[in-house]
Image (cartoon, rainbow, N blue to C red; front, side, top):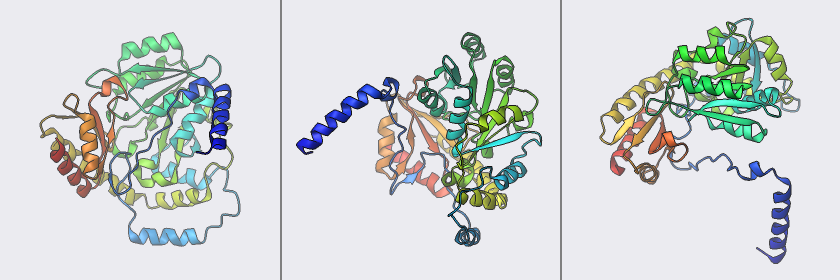
Amino acid sequence: MSKLGRMNAEKIDNLVKKWVRPDICGLSSYKVQEATGLIKLDAMENPYIWPETLRDDWFTRLRNLDVNRYPHPQAPGVKLALRRVMGIPEDAQLVLGNGSDELIQMIAITLGGPGRTILSVEPSFVMYQMIATFLGLNYVGVPLCPKTFDLDPGRLLAAIEEHQPAVIFLAYPNNPTGNLFDEAVMLQIIEAAPGVVVVDEAYAPFTDASFMSRLLQNEKLLVMRTLSKMGLAGLRLGLLAGPAGWMAEVEKTRLPYNINVMTQMSVEFALNHHEVFEEQTSAIRASRERLLEALAARDGIEPFPSDANFILLRLSKGNAEQVHEGLRSKGVLVKSMHGSHPLLADCLRVTVGNPGENDAFLSALDSVL
């Protein structure tokens, strides 16, 4: 770096220290692993692409799509298709987001403010805490039960009573543990909550359990989903469903035109062929069970039951990072959870891939254990 460059860097550093919030300076940005040339089993993506006939029809529609105008601000065609496919109650209203991340931010903005608290369990989806920090809100993480990763109702109810959270986020199934929480305890938490409870059903395609049908049975319940896991991760679309009164307020925090024309058209098209994605997610479910059995049969590995499209596994003490890097050297990328939370010591998380990818992962795993 030149002398002038060093001087400018020092000035910028001083300005950053003066003006950027200390809690933001103390954060690390969300890290995405470099995956070029690797079998990518680190991000809970659907491994299957669209059939060629479907792609041809989609490309034809894309060729006829004009992008010189802003998209429809409400995306009514998308909402109609979502209602049809997801069984959203007729009286529930929808707000759409650029993935579920934006919806989490919109919820936090709507219900946040000085002294307000967001509560979740730990370990869980990191964006609950990160977005609370971005917005200067208090965040309370209640530990799950060790070994089983179940909800601890006593600790949760005590935390709710003490902190009076404006929002409680509960991922169902939970990420990164993959398990479904006890429905009775979930209902107990919803009843005890002073504010809203957002049940995050990002992995709904891989389980038969859902709170969607209960949506209007409790005035504090909201349900959030994403299309990313079913096979549309690149389109970035999330949805929040709930009573009209709540949705009208969240809608006020939605940035104009947040769902672009290509996403709107592509999502409508994809949902009109929903049976393709149902076949793919069914195949992933079957592969998940085979992968769980294969992992359980290997010494030194403890795989945890999963209702998602990934499996959390615990390795022998002190082995996780070595195995993670060993898998990478063999061309397989998984996610190391070791060090992210005390309950995840010695853990890796592997996405369920297609049969060939799963076999490659198991072969690589055997070679590095």
